[in-house]
Length: 283
Image 1: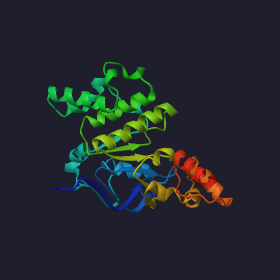
Image 2 (image 1 turned 180 degrees about the horizontal axis):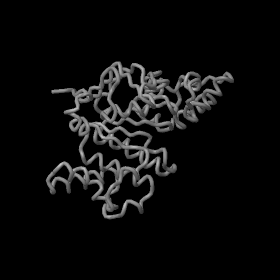
Image 3 (image 1 turned 90 degrees about the vertical axis):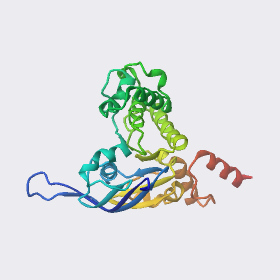
């Protein structure tokens, strides 16, 4: 049986030139990474770094110019297996309005299943389960346009969950949301990962979201700059700043205090950790 993982090896991707014969635009320059089942991975990078292009390779929206992406044993270049790949890897995009197709929430979640010919009783069960998983079951008979941005995004996630994928890739799903909507979506993602062991790949530019992942991958100029735990990656404040990225506010504060000679651990990520370290220092 194939391992449930996404394996990226030597991934090169070039967008074609604007005109025939014009040089292409090289975006990904030989990436290697493996995403095992059950992991919550945050992918960071400034605009134009290649992070969204990378995400679109995970379910074969894009296919490599060079190298390979293997999803659960299937090469994404195998056009006959696109359907299988997309059943394994669901994509959620930035704008929930672009993903919602029906006028009633539960019909929207059922849409893809109906197209796949799933039996009606099974559709009913999957739709109810998916809406409960994202805490939107009580809104099942509402019109999507009456929902908040965060609620719409959770409906979009439910539509993917109903397909029962092993992986969910979310490409900046909170970029268009207010802080309340952002926290709703991130809470939902974390619960899916923890309670249902869904493998999550979150493309984000919010450091506070990345801190909550198991693993952070930093993409810069089409290559992987760093790949490690949040503590490992965010302790490299100067490196991240040098490529135009921020660090979590607490990490920034600790960095500034350390620059002034105050002896604090450099891998502090949360307010609670900062409070405990300062309390210990002042005791």
